[in-house]
Image 1 (cartoon, rainbow, N blue to C red):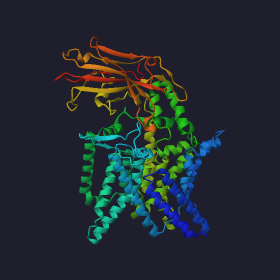
Image 2: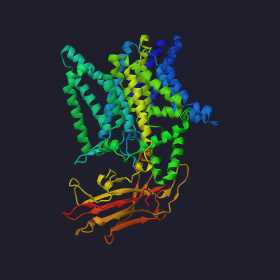
Image 3: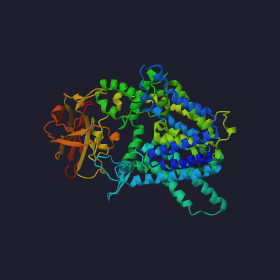
Image 4: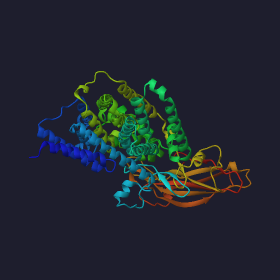
Length: 626
């Protein structure tokens, strides 16, 4: 007969492996935690002593049960396979992390080393992906080779020698998932670094391993900054400010260090803003009324349309995509040019954890999520000196106001597991909550404010969310080309733009009329644009201008992890005989390269004479290219 201690040791072994493999593989991490939980229940069975359910267990169970309110109460023929397995409710098994065997003191110290090792692997894989020209996950899955058509990582910067640096995402598929894992692992790395620092000060001697920890911590922060997950950066800033803010007396002692840190951070942001287009776009999108990426606003417009009809009982597990497309369909009927933007907008979740649980579980689901957040933070707040280890939990709560981190399997599992670690380690005297702390109240208050902001975003007029995007031929945004679209004035190229030529391409419209739930039909109306040539009337040395008619695939590049193919259909020289030059083409008369809807785009090529003003002509193009 197997001893119960063997079950305990096996559970602990797989728990250690879980923290090591999580940065490398989602499947392996789920297998490891599954075995750890299995051996935990075997241990409880052998010892005939099962853990008691706490208010936290009941709350999170209640959240997932609330996902069943709609199919049970209102849906006459629910698809239970869809509801239980192929939906958000399918993650309910992850709650089993709360039933892991409580760790002994020596086991906690040992597990900390494995979490630290996993954090180091996460940071090193992120640094490698920063230098590697292919996505690590697909490169490994494809047999350590790059297959033609696979989507490449985002290029951050390229040196004059051709060396490229890329958006760090490690072995994850998105920068948000990698940022979420950094939020969980980095506090452990920081904790170990600070612990060694205190030990060195106590003994008056510097350890040889200390510079290594400092280097890993700084590299982790560097990657987090380059990762450009604004939600995680905000969540980390808010959490460290609230949980680790020094007293007024301490601030007076360290105000010079704080000021120097803020100045350094501001300088770094300023340098990146002026040297890196991807970072510049991330900052600009925070303040732009007509952003190049309005997906979050689209999502909130539809979130509130869904809530207006289903605020009490929600829509149930597995129904978000269907409800999203139903609401989007009505928008496209009125504004047909918005189809593609809505088509590529993520439709799997609400991109706001609180709203997601409210939409799926109705008012009970939203209330229980607030209660769960409150209980978790109250428990964390009582840990005092050890809470730095677990700051990934509140970071994800704050960051979850702009993304659904708790609906991402790769984030949810380590989130629940690390939460279980400190909850299981709490003594019984700390289990009761006598008085709400300011930390919990602040989070709930912030969630309410963020909800109000999301509601305000949902009122953005539809026309303000649409823009004909302009890019260079290498698909990086063309700032000066963008300014020409529907402008009243010509755009003068600055001296920083070198060379006698300038080129860009403008996103046009689809060659089919299409909506959600229906098949596209060939568009009969011409797709056209007009170039205003009046700025060149008095110029003796006019530029040579060619307009290119282009075709492009229209699938979602983020979903298929590959680039859209493009084709040149024809190239037209611009004549200056009239004040305006119009290009108009009937889509169904253009060649078809695929069986799917294709974009009809326009390319512009300018060739300027020596020493003349390099002016770009204003371009008129309607929202529906009419």
